[in-house]
Image 1 (cartoon, helix red, strand yellow):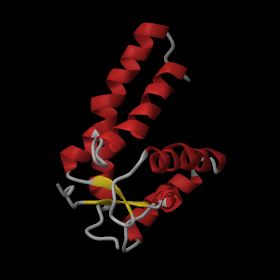
Image 2 (cartoon, helix red, strand yellow; image 1 turned 135 degrees about the horizontal axis):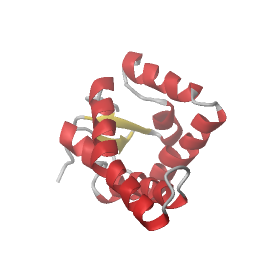
Image 3 (cartoon, rainbow, N blue to C red; image 1 turned 135 degrees about the vertical axis):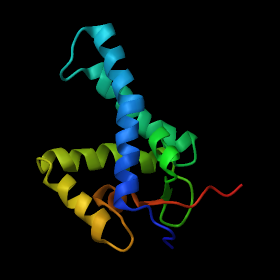
Image 4 (cartoon, one colour; image 1 turned 180 degrees about the vertical axis):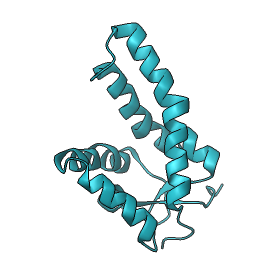
Length: 136
């Protein structure tokens, strides 16, 4: 029961806002604490935890998604849990790495062209991105 899926441009803008608002400060903090700018395990771990935990705690939102008015939900309409977000974040990330980024490009086309706007990570985790607000 997929209703009001969030489209490509909203999702892209939400990701860009997350990178600017969250990613850059985490990168700066990681550099200050470790002195390393590339392949920083601390920075990667904080980014992973941000995308894993915040949507669970904040009804499917990240900071960027909240600003653009979209959130992640399960296909049945329920809120995401830690297991779902692990699949969406870690397992799909492995798929993108193993395919050398080709699956990421395919995902972008899927969001742009599919009626339900679901990417590979959405299919793996059983989620979609919607413009619907959470129900009280």
